[in-house]
Image (cartoon, rainbow, N blue to C red; front, side, top):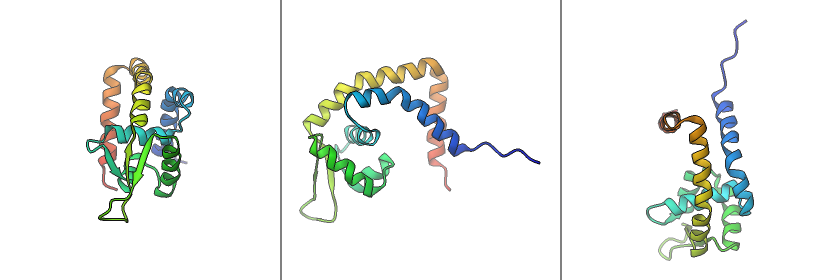
Amino acid sequence: MSRPTPSLTLALLQAREAAMGYFRPLLNEHGLTEQQWRVIRILKQSPEATLESRELAEQACILRPSLTGVLVRLERDGYVRRWKPEHDQRRLCVTLTEQGHALFDAMSIGMIRQYQKIQQQLGAENFTDLMALLRRLRQLEP
């Protein structure tokens, strides 16, 4: 009887959980969910500073119906602004508010510190290799 092959998807999920263990305390401290932080981070790092909700959902790996709830809560808390462009009411655009930028900036030091802990434990070269392999995996064609 042959041994089952290791599950790549399960290993990735387990690695994600291990990595999130470094970041969840900081998210909890600021009252954010993982999805909310992903949205804030993606908007902050977007060269355009504004994204359509469709593009934001894709980059954040959040289903569009779920993103709606995330954005409603972020807007309620003053971190994002949503609007429909006058020329195309089917689109929904999202941008960070000043408060959203300030939150990102306030959390960045703690987040960077956690990344440094991971890098120290993995080793800088292994961390770089891991990020490169993950980038290559994302680029594979199914």
